[in-house]
Image (cartoon, rainbow, N blue to C red; front, side, top):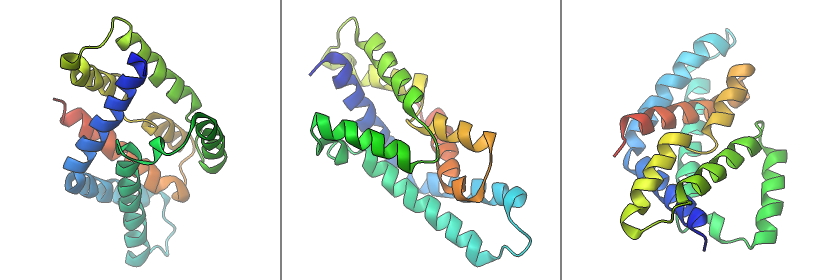
Length: 172
């Protein structure tokens, strides 16, 4: 395994641990962000049940994201060929394009790993990668939503905003 790939693995693990440790805080932030955005986007007949449904969707996306970053998660179940196909499928399913963001993340990992990685510095470098790049694919989600806000994008957006805020306040 290359040093850059090792660093990316440490990055995913660090994100998993931080999000799991801040689960309750993230859910509270999600609810606040959803409420604020719905003031602008919701039609007049939007009721409490619909609000609750958006919050539940955002909470489910949080659970999904934590599992996405799980060091023993889905990213290790595919071989290289399947990973490429999974990436193409993801671009078709998502309403945002995170290709450039992923390229930036892998480039930053390669730059940080260029001098080599010792066991002692691996976590420090993973933290630096989180500080530089945030949590993938949050930048793509936030940019696409802010360019064209829509109700169907709201749970993803609220999660991305909550994660980035939480990461910036929970640096090691």
